[in-house]
Image 1 (cartoon, rainbow, N blue to C red):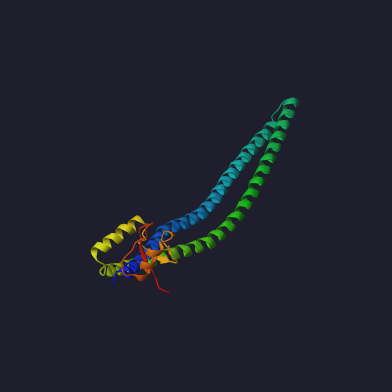
Image 2 (cartoon, rainbow, N blue to C red; image 1 turned 90 degrees about the vertical axis):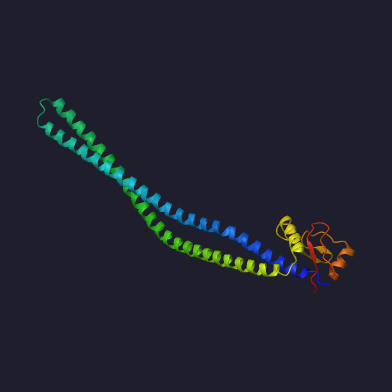
Length: 235
């Protein structure tokens, strides 16, 4: 007697494959987005160093301008030295000049520190540039592979769905309706193998009498625990 259990099992196998592939299909776009974010993070790191270098260059110019302003003050003091009438005024101008010269030396030290930071950052920038170039190529290649995998999976799912439609033609509408009801209730798995007296769908023990009937395959039987169709695969 033809029960249709083998056809249902074939349909169930296809549904299982579709579920696995659709789960992969959900993960791949996330993985691709993560790779893109990694690439953007590398560029962001480079941009951060570039911004720091711009800030240092601006600060350096400000310090150089400050030196120029102080040197202009010295020129004026030098001019005033020739015009003073008292010794006290002369000494006061010399003290002011000495103070400004010390200030200029301090600013020059600050500029040297800025230049050292610039040199360090420029080396870091070159290293990051090399890293970005290498890593971006790797990331781009990974993205291409993921996108290719995505298309392959989509095509495979389409093929399986077409195959599924063909198999459905060999199943009666009432039986197919019951199959779909069980499938929706049991995470997409409507048929489970009966192995060694156990249901492979819920891993519960099948009553011995029922198990022997399932082996005979003269009728359709469902698991008393999870409600899935039971299929015995002879070895």
